[in-house]
Amino acid sequence: MKTLFSALLLSGLLLALAPTAHAQRIVASGHSYGHSYDRAERVYSSSRVWVPGRYELVHERVWIPGRSERVWIEPVFRLSYDSCGNRVRVLVSSGHWENVCTPGRYETRAVRVWRPGYWVARGHGN
Image 1 (cartoon, rainbow, N blue to C red):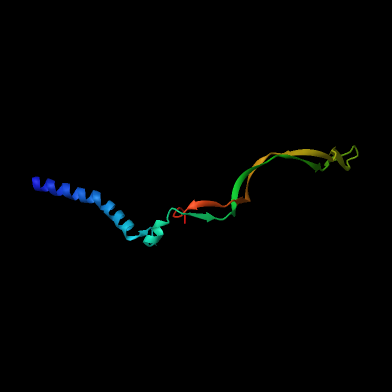
Image 2 (tube, one colour; image 1 turned 90 degrees about the horizontal axis):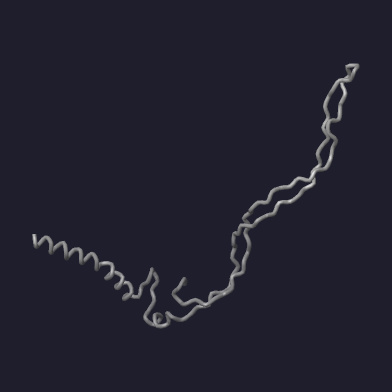
């Protein structure tokens, strides 16, 4: 029973230390996330790099206000019969202009925006 407990304790300890040893091996060998560099570059890793300004395409939600629009309403006629039995067109409603209001709405628009240049520490985003 003591031997089993010792073996379990030892294997748990090895598993807990395994990721740390792997991480130390990566840093010591000079490789970081697939990029390799020599020891001379590590000395200057705190230097800064200029990232130039650029245009970005930004999508923004814009409110388009409602508007009033003048619309022509056609006259309305109805067929009817006069006292002699003849078919006659009767004007029910004359043609006229009406102001129709369209409601406001949101619209997504793509806008080019200038992002100014900036300094960044080497190794951050490069």
